[in-house]
Length: 66
Image (cartoon, rainbow, N blue to C red):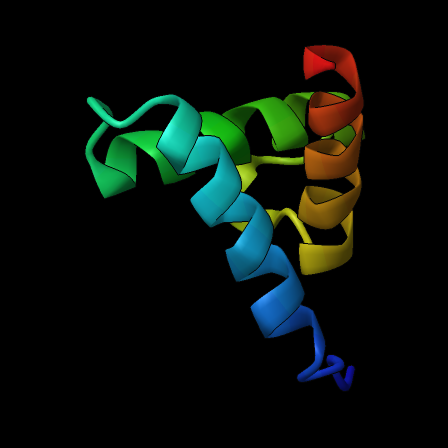
């Protein structure tokens, strides 16, 4: 499987935005939280969540926060 390298800045930008909303979280806490919830939504273990699934979860999360 080949993953699109253009996903990296897109996803990092969204992670930065979310992290700025919760600045008291340590980085790994944030990543663990996002991975857990994205995995829950996709039915995957958080360590096997594809970047596309994480990105989709982040978009849904962003829409709910508005």
